[in-house]
Structure formats: C-alpha cells, structure tokens
Length: 509
Image (cartoon, rainbow, N blue to C red):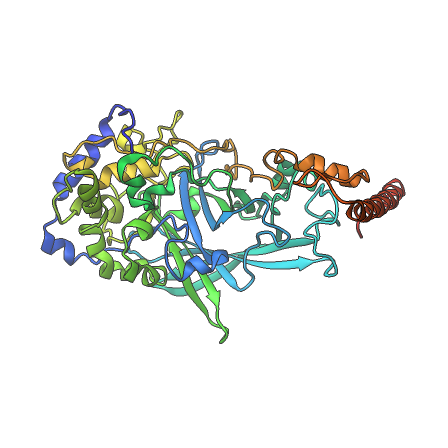
C-alpha cells in the first residue's frame, strides 16, 4: 500500500464522481435496494471452499476482445496456488462439478444465459504413477497418460426457469498441466491445439494457465506488516490456475443493440451423494468475499445468487477495511453508509456500464459497445480509460490499487494514491485468444547448489561425499555396488528406449 505515482485523472473519473454524487442514495433508500452480495477474487477466501480447490473460483475477467472488437471474451479461473511441480497427480478439473459462467443481459440480477462446462478424465495406463510416459508433442500423444475432455452447453433461462439447452461442443481436449521442459518441450503448441471454434461462432479454451492476478497478498499480515514493510512482491508469481476462456460475438450476449451492458459471474456446482448439484463457489467482482464479507457470511455468499444479495448489503455500506486502515495507518475512514460503493460495484457507473432498471447485485458489469483501448491504463476508469475496471475487467487491470483507492474514498473527495506496489503481472499475456499467459513449467528454477553434481555422480557410478567428509570402507563398498547397479539399469533402460524410438515406437509404454 505504498503510494504509487498518481496517474492523471481523466473525464471518466469525473464521470464516476458525478454519477455518485447525483445518485446520492439515502441510507434508508439503500437498505431497500436488495443489492447483490459482493463476490471475491477467491484465493482460499472462505472456510469451506479453501479445502476444495478443484471447486474454488479464483477470478473472473470480461472484456471486449482487443483484436476482435465485435466479440467479448470471458475468462474464469479455478484452483488457486497450483505449484507447477506438484506431481505426480497434476491439476485437473473435477468430474463431479458443473463450471458455470452466468450472463445477466437485462439488469434484473438473474442470469438469462448460462455457459456450462463439464469434464471427463481419461487414463491410458493405470499401472504407472506417471502423468506422462515420455515427451508430449500433441494433445493426442499416446505418451500423455492422463487427459481431460469437456462438453460445453448453453442454457437459456427466463425467471430462472430453463427455456432451452444447446450443446455447443463435445469432447474438446483440455490443455494439460505443464509438467516441465523435458515432458512438454513446446507447451505453446499444446495450448494452441486446445483452442476450439464451435459451429455457432464461439471460441473456447480450457486448460492450465499462469495465474493472471497480480498483487501482494501480505495484506493479511496486519495490512502489509502494520508499517507498510511488506509490499511490492507479487505473491502469485510462479503459480498457475486452471482456466476456462470463452469468446463470443457480443450480440450473442446482449439483450439488444440498444442495451449493450451485461453482468457476468461464475459459479461451481458440486454433485452430492444424492446425485443433486449444489453451488459451492461464486465469483464476480474481485476482492469482495475475501475482504468485504466477514467470516460469518463467506460460505453463505458462495452458495447464494445475485437476486438474493440484499442480506449482504451492510457489508458493502459499512465495510471493515477502511476502519482497519484508520486504526493502523491513521487514514480517516470515509463516512458511512458507503453509497458510493453501492453505486459503482452493485449497480455500475451511470453513463458507462449501468443497465437501465438495474436491480443492484454483485456482478462484473461490462458495456460491450466500448471500444478496446489502444493503450490500456492499469487504473482503468479512474485514469480515464473507459474500457477498464470496473467496466468489466481486463487481465492488465490493477484491481488491487483501483479497489483500495475507491474503498478509501477516492470518489467521495478523499483523494489517495494507495496501492500494493505490484503494478503488472510477472508473465506476459497473449495478444490473441485465450490471452492468459502460458503456465509456469514444473522444471522452473535453477538446481540447488551441489544437488545436480550429487545426482550426476550417482548416475555415473560415483559416490557422493558425506557431510562429515567421507565414508567408512563398508559403507563405501555397499554404496559403490548400489550405484554401479543403478548405472547398469539406467544404461539398459536407455538402450531399450533408444531401440523403441528408432523402431518408431514410444518410450515407457
């Protein structure tokens, strides 16, 4: 939360402030609005879901596609903190889950469209512990032992009742976890093969990706250490997520050309022992279930829906974070009730991304008629960039700094430059769909000093020295014999592998 250099505020900042001042909800009026509870960038944000990572939404992004401005791209991520080398059971989508992306295109806090992803897992050889049994050159490579496929359905609803269901895609391959350079020498090729174009004009992707959320999560250590000593480190650097991306003609999402604003959120439904699916995770805007909803509401929020959000209103109008900031850093908390937060995050900015006749609820709202910015600004609307957060959310938007400044009163006269000193992602985003960065490989990083030589000496039949500087004769003879035997086995295995390769076979059948 060290101050970052203030970008020049443009006309949109004035638009936001003016809209808030004009709206000026009275406390009594706000209480009757029945707004939606805020969703979170949910990296382990609630007690129950923290123990179910396969079902845990981490972030949702929605933006007009920069290279195809007649389309909208939605990215939803799951499974936080994927350690790249976390094998041999790498990261798969759950088979007993429905991963849903909801679209509200008339502002009534009910989803009119649901894009549903369901996954199947396939194992070629159950007699090995290996995820892959040799270098993987393609998604149908026989050496990719554990694979997943998915189906994609479009559900159309009216007043939460199913009107129609359409299968958009069947058995589409999922991009695998990036085991390492030896296993997947060209992961970008595998990523490209996992992009699928449907007959209906949609483009879809599912697979592992770099976690695009950049921030310093040490906020939970007494708000960056209690003295701002813990800022500037991207806590999610080097971690991956499982990502679903969907690109659609914008006209397929919107109610009409005259009403281009859509609200978007994602949910996970898990199948119970009785065969019924129950919602266990929900996410729209970033950072709400993590730092707005208190412990007593977090699990309830994850099981709730936008049209039932009134019960969480007090968490938005009387947020805890500004009070903590005041107690620790002596920064005055803005006056309550925080109707500015209701207006921006539960209704959308008037004149920008607020649908007519809106029912306040927590959704990521996007005006699909706003052209992509030629040079996106990380502070989005606060810095005059109408194509950025909170008008949707782009991968490059610095939602921590934006949200922190707004929560601390940026739009109600308390100008500030608060931020976590992490201004961009550690990995490059793509210029085309699915835009998310390639996942960090399991073979990342340098070998610890000495470890590589120790392993090589053993493979060569040598014996590493002990910490004490030597071995007795009995230990030395036994170790030498074991190392020699291991070396013989490795050589023999290598000959068999080479013969299979030259004969057109593959290793480790």
